[in-house]
Image (cartoon, rainbow, N blue to C red):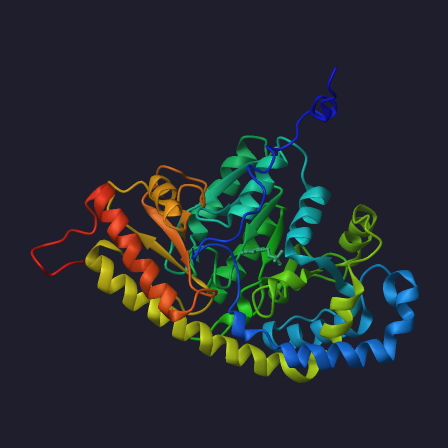
Length: 411
Ligand SMILES: Cc1ncc(COP(=O)(O)O)c(C=O)c1O
């Protein structure tokens, strides 16, 4: 009799991965990948060499003599920089290094959520978080958005409805600065109002801020956590950051900033005895002297790619593609005419090597967003962007008659 290990798998697992990894699509407009040429390889080599020479012997200990929260010099750098760029007052003791910010999100869910709970998020939302909420068995209620992000009146309504229904909200999940996928930036007044509402309804806020450094137009508002004037130990905002979007997603270095009551409990849930050390050693050496300059360069590279993507969309889709020009980040959120189902579009486009993210999957309201899609411009080069968007427009025209084409003036 053959042995089928699947029979031994526990109940309630998520669906298995559909197929083994077989490479990225040629026109890779999905995922938070970075610009290949933007990786500061020589500076990484120099920083890694210096840090290994100085600290290599401490690899012999778990946690590099800094404990399980992560390498102290890196945490000190992050705390100082968040003070300068996001107005945060936290010291290194309030930081926990994680394996990407995805582990940070997992830990927050693990800490706060029980099946049946209710959380709130922006109505269009990062699929990685929506999937994790679904897996935690909670209901995620979407808040309407406008060009400035979450609508605070609608947020207030949902909080109130949930309280009346006897199912108060556990936390508000928000990506306030360069929201994924809409690229909106929540103004300071709304951040303050969100804090007031969270206090009124006694819930926490999970602030996912991995794109905030990539804002190339307008001022970065203070982090929501920075606006919370709670006493030490009583803060309601848990903040997550990452080096994935600014430096390199493959490093898998993210962090949580929170008060000790949160961190102390989280440390008992984070059972990996500390996040990997080499990346932390290298970043602690690299960042204090290079990170700010690197971010400035990345913003200019990304803005140029964004301009190319916008021109390609205008040229190939004309008025059929509606979108706001992002002020930062790596993606555009496009609205096509309502007869276009972007799940179907993504399926057909995938056959021609084009990857895109359908709106119905990237939201809490599949029907409302079925003609939307997210397209990322951080990774492909300019030529690939132009070529891929032209192909996508052809495919979309063939399947949905969108964009309209008249005479010889295509697109
Ligand atoms: C909003 C948001 N949060 C978290 C993540 C996870 O990033 P990482 O685990 O690479 O830090 C992403 C990645 O795309 C994201 O867009």
